[in-house]
Length: 205
Ligand SMILES: [Fe+2]
Image 1 (cartoon, protein in one colour):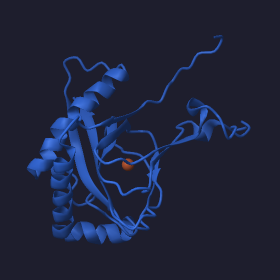
Image 2 (tube, rainbow, N blue to C red; image 1 turned 180 degrees about the vertical axis):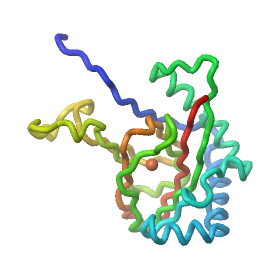
Image 3 (cartoon, rainbow, N blue to C red; image 1 turned 135 degrees about the vertical axis):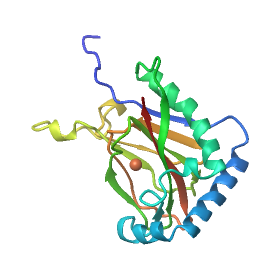
């Protein structure tokens, strides 16, 4: 082939563990509901900044240090984050990778989350706890979108590697990891049931 691909953008998607997920997700869903119930500041913040939904992002962003079920999730996620870091060829010899933030997102019908990235971390992601059939996907944007200048539009059937947007279905028991600079959004949840996810950031030292 005369052409090779460089500067790749990797997105990691995997099941958290082989077995035992329904019970673990029940525990997490209960913990998420409890967080929302007790987080008045977060509910108020969400009214203004997370239309129609609830997030503990601004009020309780370190749940892995507050509750054992979130701490368990932290341990399980670390395995995947380290695997993703290896796929990125990051040199972490003698360095430590650790979760800095972990927060709940509850999206009832009509809630959405506009385009954003995750500052102050190198790997971010989301773990799905409750995903009603047909609920909103996680949509990523080509990080070079502002540099295409005079490029013609892409074909409707463009290969995945050449598309400017890619959407990952939200699937309970699965996680999605990406480099924290990669912009993404969650479109409107059009199902009647709540879509529950837990987002997180990792840093290194
Ligand atoms: Fe995000």
